[in-house]
Length: 332
Image (cartoon, rainbow, N blue to C red; front, side, top):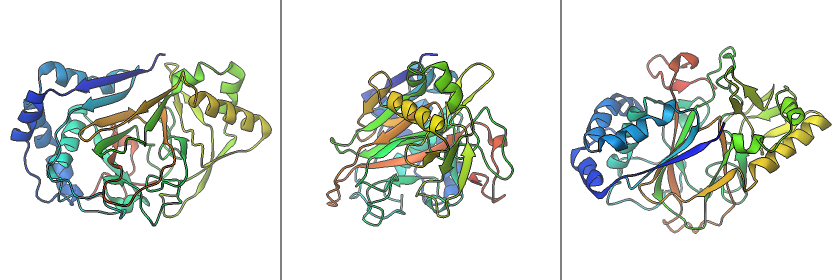
């Protein structure tokens, strides 16, 4: 199957209409309020868009061949504060930016979620360099390259049955550009383009549970799991839990297959480079691509790279909530 990257460009007129119609979110740091506001945000958002634009966005989820969607030219708040250097930072200064994110999730028919043990249980994660985590291989690190990976890949993939007390791996991951560093690209590798370079024997090896996966540094209490890196569904579509940094092959055959897949994911046939300018929104199918970023040196001057990350799922029946009052807060 050929992966497709879709780009949607918001016109100036659409941009202005969104700004004029989007509701103001007052309790913006309350995730319950954000989830409750999704429908109204989505309604006003769609009122500002042309029908063709709405169709291009809403069709993404249903198209198996579409794995990456980029929406460029979205509005964001005028007075964006300096890039924060704390892992938790108030969203109060960016109500329009947050409302646009929630509106897109509503338009796509996705549920924003967060996982226990990560990001202090909040939906939005600031992808920023922090002094405390500068040496971590996480979205808050910068010293080291963050290798190709699938987020929360220790959790069950879409073709797999849910394991006891564990939610499914996030289906979607989105990034919204708040502030751009022209030297720091987001790299996306298309799984199918990588697998096309591997022979059948290597793929079979990657389907064996011969890999030890450790939860990433962003989790408070990481555990370890023995799992396959590839899983095929009944339609012949492959899903991946590849993670360069947190996977240890259990034997020599698994090690060779692991490195061959890594090389294929980094090849020019598979990898694509993206800069997210302020107002650009990217969402990708987390289990159908891998992503990474190179190491960089933050300036810590308030102008460093700043993205907002959200996880999304389409089927809440595959999720295990740890709080009945917060169904989006999931076991991991």
